[in-house]
Length: 397
Image (cartoon, rainbow, N blue to C red; front, side, top):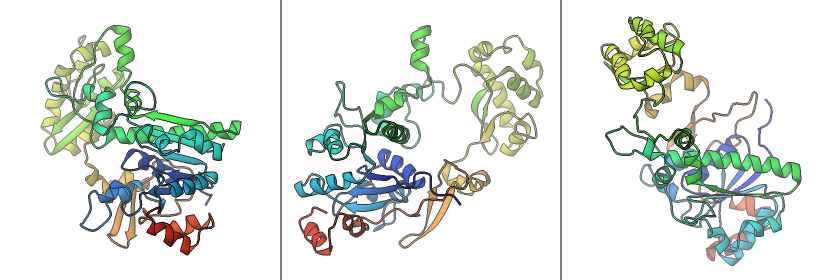
């Protein structure tokens, strides 16, 4: 088996909660040495999420898998100097504090890069480091609202809806990971690193399905269309006798396949439905026709008719994440990981979607215990057990 894709990279991870830790978990999955730097005594707030009493949060376990953990108060004068020494041997610093927090501690990107000009410094915040909202607090729901995503999510007669889960946090995390990789590529070409300023509002606005472009060019306003699609049909989540099936078509050929599958081929040649524009204009009517056919059948019967052995159109049964832990496709793709854990018995992780042939898995399977790597990491700086005891007594580590 070949080595790990990002082996040899060292990332200092100051992130906490969801967005930043998700980004750095991607790097750990790919073999980078991710050193999670947490507050002394308490650590990342996310350690105290969903779990049995007295155990570390299972959400923390998943988004911090494969990392090492040290404790350090970077705002303490001695802690700040220790952190700067760590920067000298690192490739990347990642943080997701409010914009300006690092600078307030004397740790602005320019200060870090003065110590190490090859250090990529990446910051994710709610609104970025510039503009009238710079430094404002944000959470997932705020990013979804301010980025335009909530306004286009939901049904026409209902309220704006937040995308399921912490969608904005995970989108921000993905952009953060892409930005770090771009920064590393740039550094390796130029010999000098840059700093990344990423706004979660920006990240969500960037995925609003070209609606700003369409609105500016055609003078139309954003619509909330539920599970339907503004520009094509059938495209919906349809209720069967024992569950829900998602069906999508985006071509005339696929539409005719669906009409044949439901025994109404005449719809495929009906002038009202022959074009995308016509189907989009009548999407409620058309989705209702397909929905009436689906409603009298089981999910398996619908998938048999619409799936590879039938019409071969894009379709799937709607499954919840807990139902997917035994999904044959995800299991075959290595997307369900189960690891023995000293406290919880077994912990289940989402696998790594990035598949590189023959690449080795991450070196560490589990998320770290708070500060478990203090000795190893600080030992590289020449600190011994007596030094660590003194620093711990002073709440520096």
